Length: 184
Image (tube, rainbow, N blue to C red; front, top):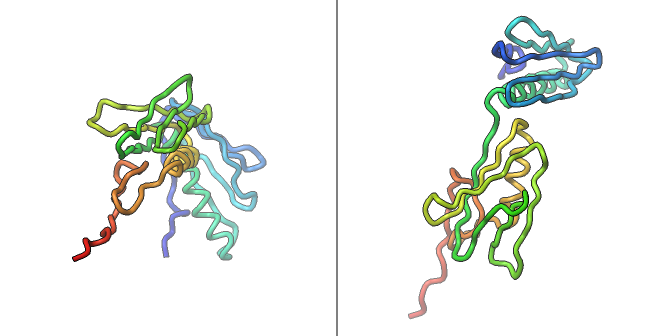
């Protein structure tokens, strides 16, 4: 069984971590600040260069939220120091993306263009110079929000299984199905 919750979360000197009496953890760093409410039954201790999460008992519920809370704090520390980034690729004839007035405008084979307004905490950009496919980059400090925005953009036209056209993650591999065979 993994003991993820027992490992301390290290952070550098340019990151400040604070915990208030309601178990709200605030992490501030060079890229921004994040706040997360941790289960009130857990104890969060901040030392000089690391954060440690402790659980009161070995009950199943305490064990599960122990590892979850530690992972959330680690993601917050990584987000304010390095940030998170997801890249999506648009594949298809006539499929394109561009930024217009802070909104992402995509043409994905529908009868109309789709406008997607990203949240203010997330930066979305389009790179059309990398070959024939447009690359959409989603960046931010909150791992959950970056993943959610990238998934929402992908859901506008998921890759179809026969030709692979649509919006996919750059590192995603689509297994294509065989089409109909010619009649003899």
